[in-house]
Each structure stands twice: as structure tokens, then as C-alpha cells.
Length: 490
Image (tube, rainbow, N blue to C red):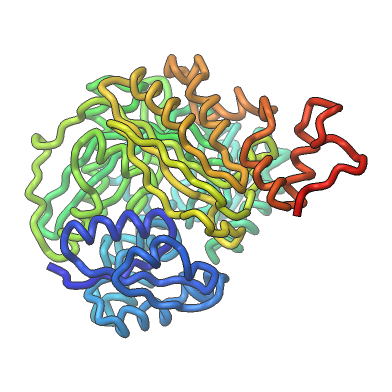
């Protein structure tokens, strides 16, 4: 087994990987930018190496610095986590060429499946259901292609993900501007402005299937995750099993995911994503990495996906067969973000002055912050993932609602109250939702009362927080609304 692994990431996922390595008796190396010097993943690792300033291109995305840190610490392998370099085929090749092991699929597989146009062609050839649309890079009479697909349609970047380079087009009049906007965003985000067109499904569910494959042709799936609760095409709540499908569809989806993995010659952990509507499902894309939401699958299936990533990368056989994998109970994950849902999920940096995590049976906290730490706007605002498990969906919802009520981060505003509102929403509880759920139910969401996080931040002297408190205060006689001689203590 590997003696030492470098984690080429930060935050909660770096902490999660370090914990798995600790249980496997593998030494770990953390890398960090200058503003991350006191982050939990740095403190948890056996060794740590500073690799540059906050700008990711000068630190976490810098090939030479990451490999240099691995060489300096005599690491055997690199685990990329998710985000940053995790789906960069050139980096995976650079790792291999440097004599190290990349914990993930082969570079060619990453490159191929990262191209939405090429991967869609492969799925069509393999017999995996795909969304009607253009099969490759747009050329010729684009207006005619769009009319042939039919409106509404989706303009989508062929490279990348995370909702970047995507536009919904309702009529021919909007096509040209949508194409230009999507190209610009794709060029800035991925360095590739290739665009494809697909039929836009107006009320689909987003359901994905977790797969594992080894170096000997063994591939299994770990069933599905429901990922339809999203804002700006990015997931915030996931659960497993999906409440939308029956066992017949579940088996068909699992079989299609394995078929997709086989045609891609897939090795290690990955995810095949589908859109589901009216009893039909369609291939969306393949994520060639560990997913943020892998925890709900681990809770339901009782399988540690990170450990299997490491074992497979080392060259071990996948000893699990499909019949060994069972779904048990129900799991839900909520992503805790430093963001304000009342202001279009605007990031809310600040200092974590106090943190209290919920505890109890069936409650899991994957956390990447600590008390006293400053959460900056330099990186993704994900603070933690709260995951629960219970015997059935209704019980899991109740457990999550209770856990959220006991999840406290003071000093900066988070989406915790918003997540609680979703848990208490009747449509969510009755499984009546699609990817448009938040736009449909929470387009004008606001706080029912001044969040404690804002009160604490204001008391501690944050000018922006004081201003926000004044905006939210409903009592005209409250000192928070006063413009008189009252001042914050210093």
C-alpha cells in the first residue's frame, strides 16, 4: 500500500481524504496557499507545504508547485479531491510522467469524458439514452440546427461543468446573444469556448449513479443519488435513494451507468449523471472524480468510496460484486455555504467566531473550517456538509431538520435557515420537485428574523453586517435600526 499521499486540495474534502488515509495507516501531505496556513486540513496532515498565494493559478492549480511538493515530501501518490485539478487530464498525465500515481481515472478517460460533445457521441454509440441535440461542435446553419432540435433548448459549454457556460433559450430571437454569452463564460472558465445545443427539459430531475471500476475490467454501481435541489445549476441538497424512481428504473439507470463506464474504459470512482422526466432518463455527463455528495452513498451502501479510490489506484482488485451492494435506509446531505440566499446566494466572507456541530446517531459532519478561521472570497464558499441517515425518507428529513437546528456558525451568515425551510416544505416532503424547485418556491425568499450570525458579526464590529442587520430589522424602535447616538461597543 502507498506509504504517503499528497492531497492536492483544501477545505472539507482534503480533511475527508486525510481521515480515510489515517484509518489506512497512510501518511498524508497537505498543500496550502498563504491564506490557508491555519486551515484544518493543514493541521490534520502529517506534513504540509506552502505552495503560493491565494490566487489558485499560483497555488492549487499550479502543476509544477503541486508536483514539487509531492517530490519534496517523497509522496507516492496524489489525490485531487474534487474541483481544482481533479478533472484535468493534462494534470493527471503530468502526475504519471513525474513518476507518481494519480488517484483517479486515466488521463485519456478524463479528457474524453470532459468533452460533452465527444462523450455524448460515445454514449449514443454505446446505446445509452441521450438528450436530443447536436452531437458535436456547432457548425453550418446554427439557426436551422436549433429549429431542428426545437425550443426551448439549452446552450451548453462542451468543456467544464458547475453550471458555467449554460443558457436556456426560449425563442430564436434569443439564440445569438445566448451563444455569445455562453462562449465568453466558457472561454473564461475553461479556456475552451466550444458550444453544443440540447433540447431543454423543462421540469426534469437530476439523478446520478455512483460507479467504481478497477484496473482489471470490474465495474459496479453503488446506486443513485437524487440531486435536483439546486441553485444556479449547482446542487445544495442531495439524497439517496431517489424518491422519484421505482426499482425497474433504478436497475435500468444502474445498467446504463455501467455501460457508460465500460465504453469509457473507466477506472476508479466516478459518477454518471442523468436527467429524468416522465419515466425516461437521459445521459447528461460523466464526472471523472469524487463527487461532493459521495457521503450519502456511503451512508446508504456502507462502502467507503475514498478508501476504494486509494485501493484501486494502488492496483488492488475490486473485491465487491454488484450483488454485494445493497441500499439500506435513506440519507440526505445539506451543503452549508457562506452565502446569503436572500441576496441571490451572494458569498458572505467573514470570521468563524463560534462553531457548534450537531451530534447523535446517524449524523455525520464533513467540515473544512475551524473556530477563529477567516472565510475569504478567494475560494468556493462551501464550509461543511451535514449528512444524516435514518430508516426511511420521512425520518431522515426530520433528523436533518433537527440537525440543522443545532448547526451553529457565528460570525458570518450561512444558508442554514434556508436549508431548514426546504426541509419543512410540503412539496419537498412529498417528493414533488424538479431542478426548478428553488426558482419555483423561493424566488423571493427572505429571513423571518435577523440571523444570529449577523447579530454576532455586527456586535464584533463588522460594518457590512451592521448595515445588513439594519436592513433586516423589522422593529423601528430596535437599537439595530436607530440612527441616533447608539454605537457598537469597541
